[in-house]
Image (tube, rainbow, N blue to C red):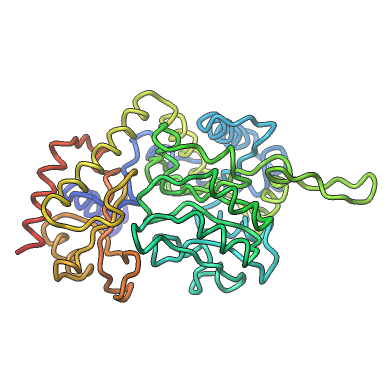
Length: 403
């Protein structure tokens, strides 16, 4: 590389990543093949539109790449292409979510999503996000008693508020989701059920979490967390009108767009121009890697590592919200031991352990200096860490934070 400043910065970042223990729940390390695909000539091609319907010439190879990613995504999640479609063009998870709302929720309509403070995501209706500026959030949280979802309470909220869409799938909720119960919540409001499986898509692909596709109308995801792909997004949508819904009545001879048809138009031309084809090529590689026995073993180890790390910290006196975890992530209450989340995060980073500060349910502190930490084991599991390593890591974290 001729640009020595950028070259040196890239070398410094590579060195930093290799020198730290990465417990950021939303990060992972991609394979060499994924990295190679990202740095190919596909980045030069403008491919506005969809395979077979582009607005530029010269896309015969690009169409094959995108179709390959589509086929592999459907195969990985065991979906019938006659019943489900997938759009692999979203640049990340947030544009994927806004494309869904734009397609299915009228402006000013209601999005029922978990509050950010309880483990939801900004794009699930939070006021500082586009999702809270163009639509109304109907917030829900976890029970104060056990810090788990109370599905009966959600049912009451849905019946009262009648949201247009119910969103499940979270960024800081460590327990498995009962998708059947969430379907009942959506049905009670006559709403669509959207599952944002960004954090757990890899666990679902690896068979460690239940699949949402039986109950969901739309499923969105990022591609770079446990799924271990490039940074990007996908939207899965039914090739019909929603669970239990019939085609709307219309004038004779006029076709009615399915959910997937609406999503396609919402992504392009509704949201984005040309897709990032290098990203889609790298996604195709990652999807093949995830459709393997070795990836299943990897996700099994992620769960083992998270349970071990959270359990060992709990043994050492740290409060783990909801009492534990079923996934790759957990929340640790440090305020109970006299530390703020910011202080704890900074102490750990000085010692080479990277986490993120995070609110905990019913937090009385500011999100800019909350009461907790969010820890995840996906990245360190990729590096080959096992339970014995998690025990040693828990001991090290405990010593650093109790100095």
